[in-house]
Length: 327
Image (cartoon, rainbow, N blue to C red):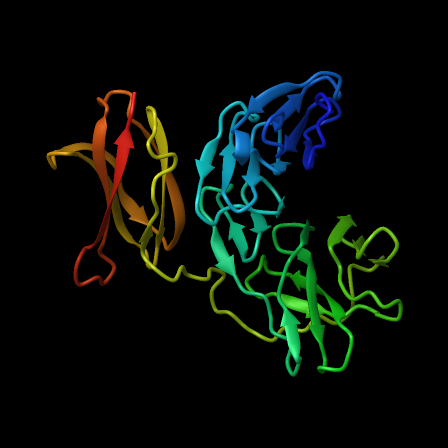
């Protein structure tokens, strides 16, 4: 590994190319090797905000994350990153292909556009359980429809021990069900899950306790909640603070929509004069980000406004935030 670093995550693109995340403030960062880990190049460094997770879908498209601070997306192998702040960080992420993927930190989210936007999904309740821990700690994707996840647990009654759960969906997360594996070996919690093909897989509690399947999981999957839509809508119309702020030339603006509608994002200077129209199109409900390059604008205070109209809205929904450009 690079220097004496104790890295926190790694992702191989092929036998020669590997990316490695190290969240240590002084000597950490995101590193890449293209010669089988013989030499390393530091692609990203941000002191106390170095990434602790890295996941590459292919040689160009990938994601990194820093605890609960941010996530980032690259489309050129890690040379440049589009950073998303707020609650976008992940601990576990997996993709079926370049478009369809899932990630989780506390909530489970799915993307169908390669990580440009994410929608929340729901995990099932265990009927009659005295305690139900709805958490995902690892994800195994068989294809864009079939997904397994580990991390959940429940107590049938207050006096009983915890029983581990394996979550499963066969329609891309439209409905999540659960399986209750054999607990004769007292496996109360599963932290990791991995499959080779659609039938052969393992789920681990630790290095000493695990379960495995050769038939694609249990025969019975319980579904307790049926959703009519695959997307769980955001709770609010939200315009997030741009990141970074203050910024030097470029920044990222994130927002989420309650309903679909005509969406515009405009930039205004301190006098209220419109300077840039960043976005003007119809969008569906979900969470989005947009990149703002201010290379042609002078330093100063600016305002960005998100407007949503149409689709039955009686009035235009509008929100504005301030940002500072320093060159």
